[in-house]
Image 1 (cartoon, rainbow, N blue to C red):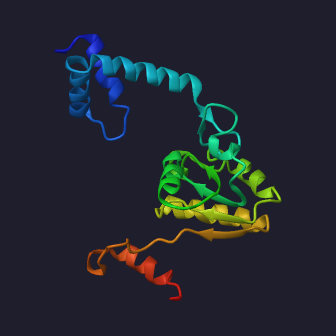
Image 2: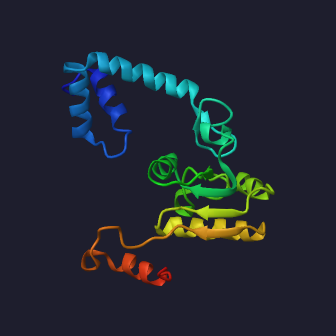
Length: 199
């Protein structure tokens, strides 16, 4: 071991971040200690504060500092629409890039029996309760187009149908500005099967 124990501990802690391996953790630690000590202290304070103050919204499971997140607390949202997503990052993407103004439910994952993630871990019983609310008229399933995401979408669709609620799935296919010759076969097949009438 060529580093002091405190530096080894810092590098090990940084490796918990996605995509951060040993070399990246080392670079980050060196940067924080050599040139960004004030930034490192601010980072530590912000992490402590976030861990102490942030939990999950009781209705949608988004990050929240109270019982309800700002979206669920708003009276300007459409209660008839409930969009189901895998992560808080998906909510941020939809809020930033679309004009969707309904409600959300954040699964905090997707069904993956091999990883021990089943309906309980995703809060699907809570989702069924939300669907039982008379105001909900459409469930929009916005899980990712992976094998696990599709299995999760199917499970949610069955819950919605059992509750007598219309269920839709976000479209997947050729990206705007993309060229067909460069699109992978699975995406192209999905886009073709999900085609719609030109208006």
